[in-house]
Length: 151
Image (cartoon, rainbow, N blue to C red; front, side, top):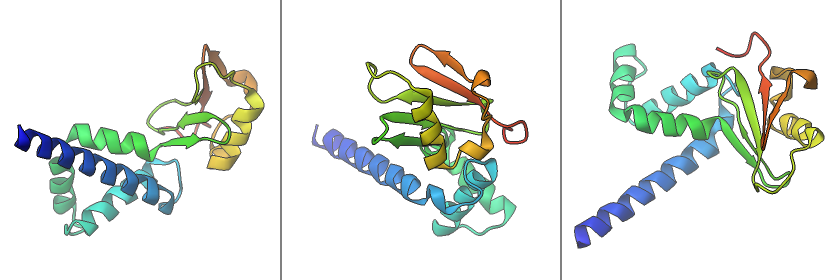
């Protein structure tokens, strides 16, 4: 029982530390909100874990991370929570759209608050500015990337 508790504490500590690392470093890699920034982050992480920058070494690192951990890190890398606006943004360039939703479910989505959030996060120049292309679904607005941005 004690080993289980210790393992659980270690797992939670690792998850917290990794999440904070991703959040604190994700804005260091330009251009933000791109596959290139994600790749640069992974290379930086692998180098700081003692791997070389050679292709084979990077592949070993990526394989060792595994898909579940990589997916979790990528989600954190491409998400933003804007408490002051009450909005959550998920902008992974692998998707065709960026998703904006309220943090609180009973909070209405307002286009102007969405525009402000896109400005704050640096997404506004990468997305369609024509709100006619934005789709409102219950508590979510989906906004298409400019054609050259998604991929």
